[in-house]
Image (cartoon, rainbow, N blue to C red; front, side, top):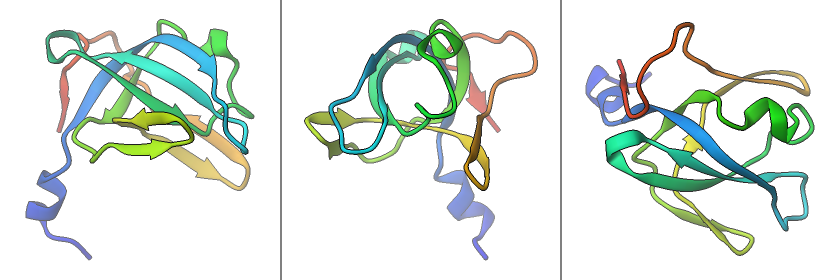
Length: 107
């Protein structure tokens, strides 16, 4: 169990994927660039390649952990994390139900 204060430390934001490339990693992954509007652009490595084509991700909005400590994965600095639900090998990324501005805070 965590406290509400622990949960409040997560800064979850809506970002729009503006670039998708194959990542040079051992596992099938994408390198993405994410536009968070007035908060700027970040990049990430995401392990959703077996479940999504580049076209399914490009120019779409998803929920991301925005304040994640950056970590080098392969030769890329991953600066945020896409949120997804999993069931076995199935991965479904979380999207807003309606259109909302990039950078919007999820609460």
